[in-house]
Amino acid sequence: MKSFTFNRIKKKTLALSYSISPEELAEILNTIKYKKLFQCVLKSDLEKLCEEQTIKHSNNFSNLLKLNKTLLASGTHDMLIKIWDLHNGIILKTLYGHTDGVYTIILLTQTRIASGSGDLLIKIWDFSAGNCLKTLTGHAANINSLVKFSETLIVSGSMDNSIKYGILQKEIV
Image (cartoon, rainbow, N blue to C red):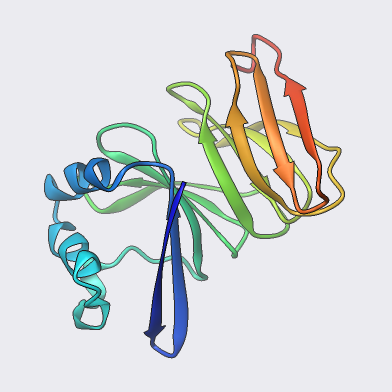
């Protein structure tokens, strides 16, 4: 996981964390209308961006996840996960269910993701249908890290100083 921080954007700090390489992000963004956005990010020239060239949530982004060649999942402090079609620049789905910021998202299968949040929950989603399939509990603080360890095992890290694992049922994944 790499992290970039850009300071003083409209008097706020924007932190962008992602689980794909800059080259993969560039590949996605170079094929669509967000090419200028990515070039500006690389030049740390965000203040020159126009409104129509930015992807926006109602709150700060906390993570991005490449789902496939044209889809991107974003999680934010506004408790939402949005599935973006970057080719057309539109939101396909908004996943509701967390009651605090979404700090981590991982890809489980072609249509399933897992998210970890400040609400102490891990949620398993079918992002193509837009619904939550399962909610896992057990942490006492923010969940800020998830790893798909095998086809049926996910591991989570939390601000409660613990690492926990969960075995997913085959029908979920």
